[in-house]
Length: 158
Length: 341
Image (cartoon, rainbow over all chains, first blue to last red; front, side, top):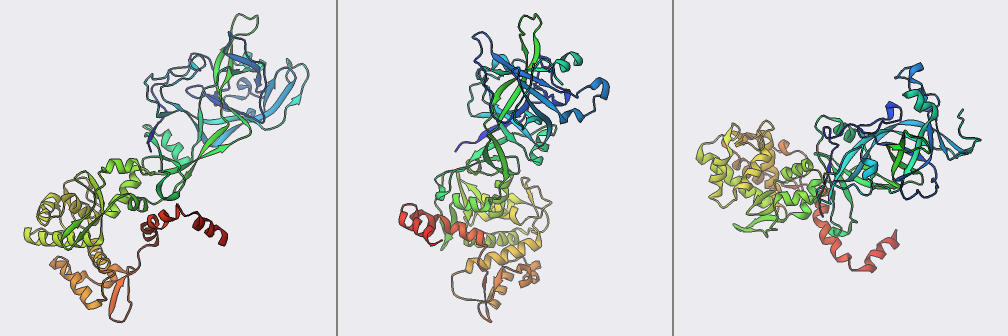
C-alpha cells in the first residue's frame, strides 16, 4: 500500500517554449499543452518512418482577429473548425473548463515522446517509477461535439 | 504573425507515438491550492484491499483534505496537444502546428471523501489497556508515521483523529488508550499536579507532569497525548508547555469515569459525582455537574447513571472487524443477506 507523491507543477523549471505556439494566446499554457476533444476517432494513414507525427488536418479560428477585435475579445471562442483531410469539417468551440484538468505524467520519464516534448520540459532522469507530477493545469479545451460535415476543397475556409 | 497563421489555420497533427498522460479533473479547492505561490505536494494513497471486505480504492490527499479517485471513461477522443514544428511538403520553413501527443480514453475525477480518521485508527491501532494495575497491550511495531502513511487520508485528518483518540507512540509501537487506561492516567496526572503544586489551568511544563506520572508506570507519550487533548487551543501542540482548558478537562474526566464504569454494576448518581469531584483539582470540584457532560449520560433508573451508548460510528467500527471476518469465508451467509433484500 504505497503512497505515491504527486508533485505540483514546477513554477520555475519551465523553460520557454522552443516552438512558437500557434494557438490563440488564451489557449496558451506555460508548457504549451492544450486539450482538444472530438466525438469519435481520427483515422489516418500511418506516418512515414522518418516523421514523428502525421498531419491530419487543421484548426481554424474563423472569427479570431486580435487586430480587429482586440486581444480581450472572446467571441471567437464560439466557433472553431477542425478540418480533417480535405473534405471533412467539424464545428466546435473553445470552452473554459469549470473544473480545470491537471495533466499528469510519471516523473522522470518521457516515454517515446522526447521529440514532441522538447519544447516543454525534460524528464529529470531519476529512476523513481512511483512518482507522478502535474505537468500542467489546463483551463480551456477545444470541443468538437458535432459530427463531421462534408466540405468541398478544404483549402478555402468560410 | 497572427494573420499568417490564423488565416490559413493551424496545422493539426497526431504524434506517431503517444505519451502516457493522465487527466485529472480538479475541484475548485484543489485548483486553488495548485494556483497558490507554493503549491504543496499531493499524495495518492490506497487503502488496503484486505481490510474487512471493502474493495481497494485510491485517494488523493492534499495536506488537509481527502478525495476519492474515480476513473471516468469517455467515448470521445480527448487529446492533449503540444506545439510542434511541422515540415510542410515542399516548403522550406516548417510550420508551427499543434500536435496531439497523447489520447486520454479515461479521466480521473475527485470526490470528497468523508471517511472518518477516528474510525480508521480504531481499526489499525491496538488498544492500550490497564487491567488490575497491569498494562494489557500488544504492540504493533509500527510507528505513527507508518500508520499515517498507510491510512487513505490526508496528514491533517490523520493527526486530528489521532489527537481525538489520544493515540500515542511508545517504544516503537502505537496505541489507542482504553477508557480504563485514560481514567487511570488522569488520576496520576491529578495526583502529580497536586504533589508538584502545578496549577493545571495555567501554563506548566508538560514534561514535569509526564515525568511525575511516569513513576506510576504510565508512558510519558501517553500522558502527553491526554494533556494535549484537554489543553486549551492557544497552546502550541508541539511546544513544551501545556495549559488545560478547565471546562474541557472537567467534561473529559466525567465522561471517562462514566465510560470506564460501563459494564460493571449500576453506578449511583451520588457516587459518580463524588468520584468525579475527587478526580478534579480542588479548585474545580464545583464544576463537576451533570450539565458539564450534557448528552453523554442516561439514567437507567432513578438513582443510577451510565454512559450513553457510544457514537454509533465508533461502536460500529469497533465491532466491524469481528463481525465481517467470519462472513468472509461463509458464502452462504453472504448470499443469504442479499436474498432477504
